[in-house]
Length: 304
Image (cartoon, rainbow, N blue to C red; front, side):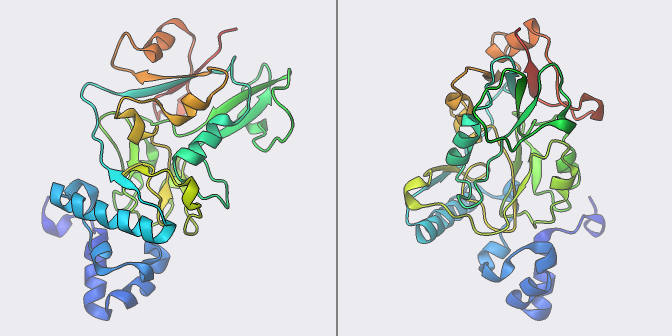
């Protein structure tokens, strides 16, 4: 692409602004668009996009983030960068006949992904709907009674890891994209916090960090990945990554392991022998909002 027609990059904008008014002043001037820049160092402001980082760059960035976590949260963490596995596309299936609405999946997500404790953030919303209907317009996600109720169905909703994700298409700085293994990720250090992706997602799967996350040292999950569950900075978007830091290492998502009802199925959609492929082949599965053409990799089904 001709340099004159190349889309404006975040660091290009910041460098130009910094040259004119200084880095700190530039941060304040552009804060409505670019997040809490006053707290960033020059190295952080000028850091390259994840796709441009060399192995040496990554080593330096990851060590800096580990040190920042130690200073901010008083705990030693390890930030890794597990890569997509060859011939793998991850997919999820959820048995609505078995889900009991206990929200153990949401709580496991909260703990595994170092979510803010004050807001009790999680990537999973469990919807309670009338049995015999899947009308989400009348769903209740704030129920506080014992579950399950006999006349209700429970539907956990999280990122659908779409093949045609509208959230990535609207990002003005390409801070979010779909990986070869089907997982949609965010470069939290590149995100400018404009929230366009949040508005574009039809599944309400994106979350915005309004403030620095509050996580007690004893509750920090130290096993972290750059594109997954590291503690996200304020002013950035975040989302479910199917626990990328786990599944790329051959483990299962935390939400699946926490489900007491065995309602969740996960695996490689490209493997005909995987459990998730068996569900798709033998059950009547459906996806949320199919008419939108997002092509989710998250399936729902009933067994009774």
